[in-house]
Image (cartoon, rainbow, N blue to C red; front, side, top):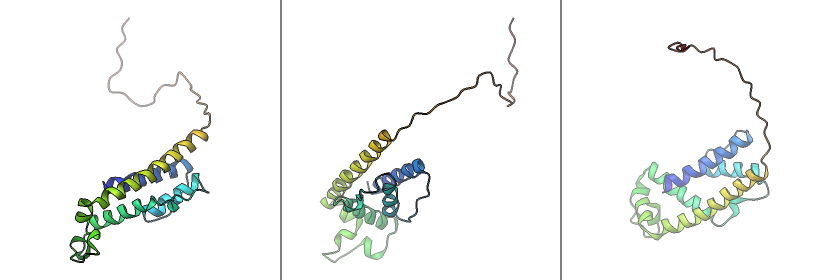
Length: 145
């Protein structure tokens, strides 16, 4: 869940970047999606949405899973138990974070789809017939008369 959520945001940022052609700056998924969303909705700050906290929580857990250290694999501190990914996953905190993330991501993706639909341009495709390939083929076609 955590890996797929972060990967989904990365792919959306990549799609937005591909559509607008500038290189996105940023090392974290939060920095990339902030820069990407500013390309198509400059007045809308998606990071100000309260549900954006779900992405932050999921990203922190994903980092703990991928980079295990003593403080995030076991904690006897009753106030720091949620920093341990396994405890977080088995608690309702994971479901709450996913719900917040899903609401935020759905809104962002819907706004992106609406932007694409509104900014669609007609494209003209010119086709020239009768051009032969210059690539060699294995066997010459048989001529049946």
